Image (cartoon, rainbow, N blue to C red; front, top):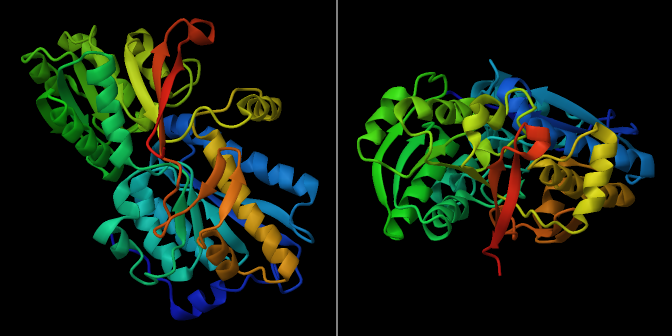
Length: 410
């Protein structure tokens, strides 16, 4: 798509927070939230959004940013229940135009980040994503191209590690832990789905596994039976899906029995790791009872410091357990709030001050533990957590149960 450009005057205006929320005498600072929040997308991104809102509420109650109240400015870029990059670009342009927005948490999906980063980079508006994993958003020539307007001013950071680690870890789970050998691969053809499938496939082959077939199936696909039937001819012992639940992950698993593949293993990455089977639109809810023998990952640590305390306050606020990316959403917001508190103490609450502080190499104490960002905005935490579906959990509705975590940062 053609990206909306930010005019020079708008960029200049965006560098200093207006009277609505900064040095002009106002008392409100806005933190933008950009997530897909309808349909199946809500089942995965909703808990991350709730982590952001919890951190903002706590900071306001404690008066953490002296002289200011924090306000969540929430935008939903889902269309027909699926994340939509074009809408994501429009939402980021809107955040940039509102000079009261000091920083943004999000997005949730890498394909949306790909179109948002050039817009926020040109304006110098900080983004912290709790869940983006595609390596090309930050690394190499692809990452440089996204921040071409301000190549030396990193404005996009993330607390999730990349698919260069995530895809291989899922492949290692399949071959080394589960003893699988033959896999069919389906990917959603977008930035995240294809990217994580690529790294999974490379490691699967590197470990001696066989790929019996691979097929791209873009979002909106409703019939995976032809692909699965073709896979069946080679008798795979697993199917890997690169994509998110809203792109068809749950539907693939649901249709596998029709192709005679109902008893084999289903592998996916964090795109299918959402909520329990009682939540409408979740992977388990869509797949139904055949969700059993499904495995997934999360590109963040499971064993966070004082996990029980975080779960307790999250459940007190929302009446449910945290989701896979609730703590990362909370952590992104903690980091932003810390820089806002420091900036307020110095009387320098500007977008540039916030951006420069977070990307300076400083270490931040968060619910995930110490977080530091490297020269391109990637986190020092390189941990992948692995899960499997247990259909006896969540009062028989089925839920994701933690298996182990793999730390590549050690």
